[in-house]
Image 1 (spheres, rainbow, N blue to C red):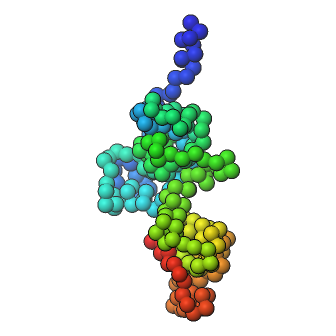
Image 2 (cartoon, rainbow, N blue to C red):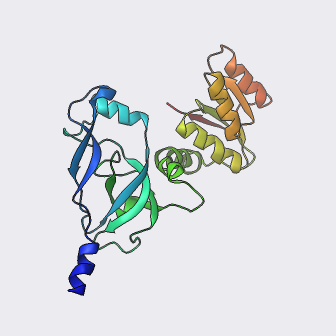
Image 3 (cartoon, helix red, strand yellow):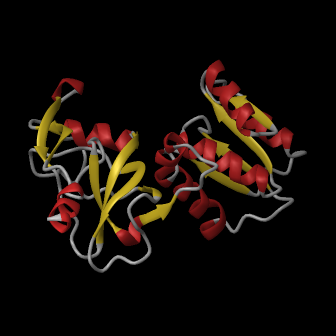
Length: 232
């Protein structure tokens, strides 16, 4: 009898709320629905979602304007952060209660719970909030790969981040500044320029002005930056 009560107390709920897209379209296509709770396969984890990252590509997919269209209906979103609720039989590196983040929510991130392959899930430091964790993967992994894997950025060099006020741009500015580069950024609004300055750029110019590239060259004593990071 005691054993049965113990098992019952650990049962996971069978349904959850999720945002569903049943037809491609604008924001009105996002519908709040109740759907079955996904179950993790052997190499997967179930994450109780605390925060979700929203990226431009999510809007393209929702509108049906992306190159690869998901099968309807679907739950949007890939980036999220939360707590491990359950693990598959082959998962050893995580256990229920762990704080994590991922950019590969297989079942969709706009939901109370999400499934992800354990290899795409990362531990979330206690120094970071769930909101910060949900913003990490797409923006910061992309910026890091561009700067250090591809650009081979080195301390003492200069970098020009064109369009630095977005997620990837801010991440690039922060990484470059922390790594000892001279950082030059651009934005198209006063708010964007202020954002780039706060992220750590040494120089920030408005790329809507005709002479902004001249200003970039002047900021590097007429030499020009060593690296260019263009955010589209």
